[in-house]
Image 1: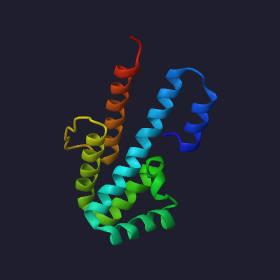
Image 2 (image 1 turned 120 degrees about the vertical axis):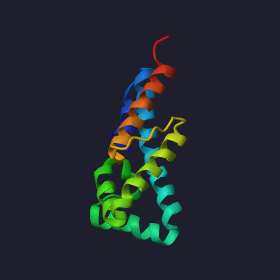
Image 3 (image 1 turned 135 degrees about the vertical axis):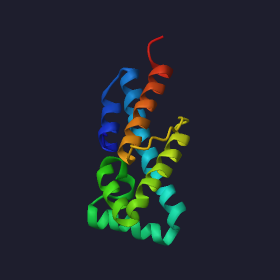
Image 4 (image 1 turned 180 degrees about the vertical axis):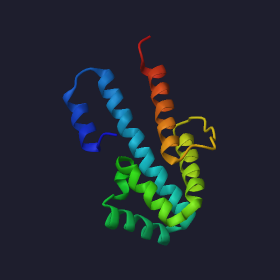
Length: 136
């Protein structure tokens, strides 16, 4: 995943539309992950408890709430520590919402973890973008 700053710099430094579309969509995917994680955690824990969760992620793991997409490994670790075995279910909920936000189909897979689901969503998202903006 690229950082928001890298995406903005790349988008400004390139003149071809395809590179800008690609960069903008990478940025959008990361922002959607951040938003989806935040909304899901707030929905599950409530506002006060989610502030504690994201405070821990920020203060103990160095991951601000708007940079979760850049450090999914730390999100997974924190989910495991907070939710234990239920972290797999929380991960599936996050990915279901992510797929819904991207207009993608969610297919449950019993051996997938949150990372696998996010990677699959990214692949499906890229395919969708290529179909929409690729060569005609």
